[in-house]
Image 1 (spheres, rainbow, N blue to C red):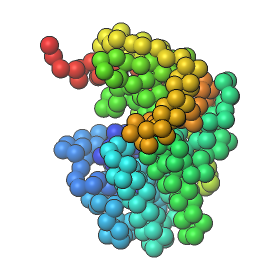
Image 2: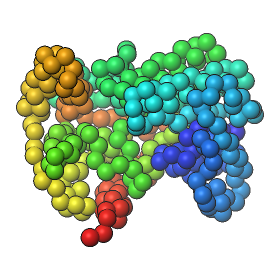
Image 3: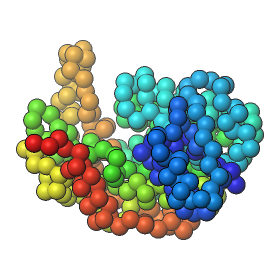
Image 4: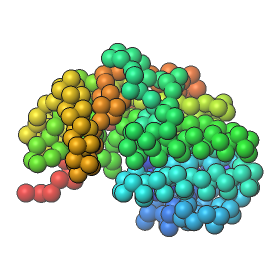
Length: 337
């Protein structure tokens, strides 16, 4: 099976390539926005000499310019997306780019598409403490209340299913939680936010839905080959820490910070006041945290990865090892004193 991976130069994309090769998928076409990172293809070819690795450069926002990239491809793993920047940029790189990919797949007759979505699409505002999020949890109908990233990923997923109905390709969706590891971010907003020399601890006792980047990539590789069409998976590791446990590990192993703890009930109350002041001030102070967002992100719920285990996925990197590697890498990135 020939597989095209979009976003192959990204934090997750690089690991998906390795996971596919480790799983015996040796005929890969790797998409990069311009060119592959220096040394990446050479190192992969040395580690997997039997692999047939092709590269393709394309700006996915350029509509209709990359049909040739899809020629001869049996399966597309679409990992490219806008992760940061202005809302307009995020929407363009996630939604418009995906539209162009799906349209092109329809034109050339691609058989199977695997979409890398996000936990952000799940509708969790009505979940109660102790409830379990899993494959059966519904997704947001629109997602606009989740902010720019949540809206873009929700729109992307609904659009994906619309194109699948129109063109008949097989669909598999993976919705990772917080992807972490060397090369990734330090502190998820689920843990808290840094401002004015302080770190506000927000998640506290809620579980942090971590997935180590190599484990997440293994899940993508496994699902791409073995999952039945129409499947959708929540991607989260076993034995995940609470937000406060992750933060305590960061404070101990990476750097000290002055921490202010905001309990969930107080956070919910503050978010209501922010919304009220946003309306009173006619938008002069943005309501970044609304009660909807607080309930959606910070309610202490549980997470299931049973769907992935049913198709044979297992966690390759144990959580304690993943955390140790991550903290060590993050500490090495700090400026020397």
